[in-house]
Length: 449
Image 1 (cartoon, helix red, strand yellow):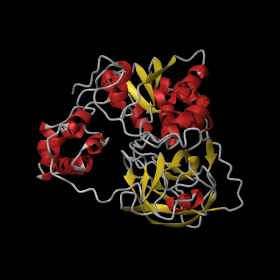
Image 2 (cartoon, one colour):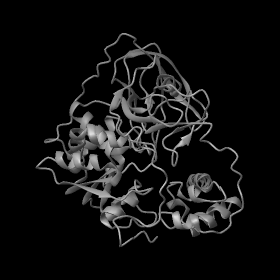
Image 3 (cartoon, helix red, strand yellow):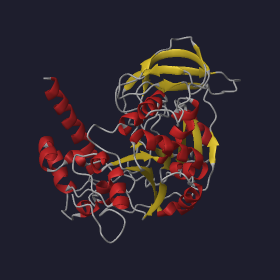
């Protein structure tokens, strides 16, 4: 896949979209108000849905278990607020699907104190006990993937983790969530690193940060505990540097093989906000009830970084921050890898890293799709050296199996670089996302048969 670039500590290819981070990267994290009614879907992570353990009419305390893990690749869900379970029914999600969920009416005059649980003691806990504690806390990847963290941290038999990589890159335009976490929650980050080092068996940790966050890099360098084998590596600004495979190449010069995982090169990568949550929650035995989210974009009046309870309805969020009268699009996540929402009644979930609102002036709806002119711009942009132009043609003719077998479709991590540079406005990443879902369904059907 030719990822190496021997002239700089970065990967080959990639793009440089406008960053748009200046409006929020200097704004401290603020607590967001509790919505009168919180809507909590049971599907907010990759893997098996969570399974309800509460009933309608039941009063719950903030931090109380609402749903248990539905299996190993699953996590529980905890109450983001003290209140009453008003309804258990299907609720809308960003995918357009209705899934089982809870309508939780928050107590209007509650202090919203968080329940204390059974702490995971760093000095005495075994690696498996730490992994169990992470699962019990409901922690998933907060960079957007929402993959259960305890599964990611479990080093397979026969493998060895030498380096723990903490991902503080945050290359997605507009988003400054991780930036603020690094500036404001350094102690939690280093406590989380201690848990992660013990859980993975890694001998050292490296915090990767892009050069546009030099203040965060300097702050963390100054805060490194004297007994912690931790270093900070600053890499050039380039998208999608935040992909774990790209980060490993940039910092360590290793290439994760096609179809492989970071552990294949003896590395485990964890998002910096996820690390901070581990350091914040495990010492108290608590579950995750809220997360930091950047709310920004030309259509937002009160831009900022907010600590928002999981399950807060998107409509309530936009009402609180104020939006222009003529907003055109709302993205959950950033504009490169995020998803444009079609329903404002969906909720904030654990994987929501940002909300970006655009007004009508910024969104060009008249982009006509033209035939591929074979310019090669998408090939030059692809960070893992795929051939998006050829794959786009195959997707058009529904040759999905050929895309997977001959052109490494499943290696695509949907960064959107190819679509960003295409002069013909071909929605390549959307083609690949659909193609991958079809390939997965076909594979699952064969295994079932």
